[in-house]
Length: 132
Image 1: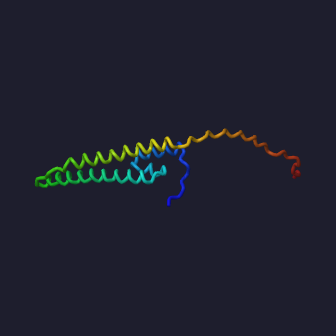
Image 2: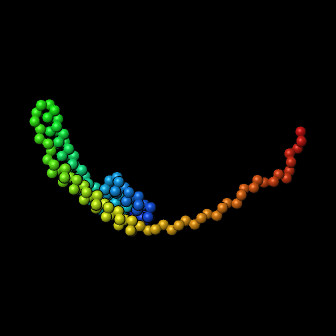
Image 3: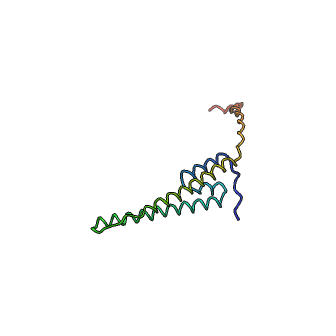
């Protein structure tokens, strides 16, 4: 069972939005308290990433084969396109979740200004020390 999290404030929701869009799709959703959506977004993003990496290794294997004198066939570009589309779906899903987090967030009330502290006045010396 998940432990209760802090209430979602406006600044925390914006932080989750930035993490979702600029770091890892799904990570901000997890931080915002949406474990199902966040886990799904990370999973879909990883599937897209691994499809693109698979295409990259196929292509590099072909190029290295050409360098050593063999013939190489470049990687199937369909893996690259499929990976990019799957990753884009994850990114758009995290954008929708981020917008819903911002809409759900409670606006923080403004903090009242603190009154100024009274000046510190040193104590008055009434008894002088003896002369030597």
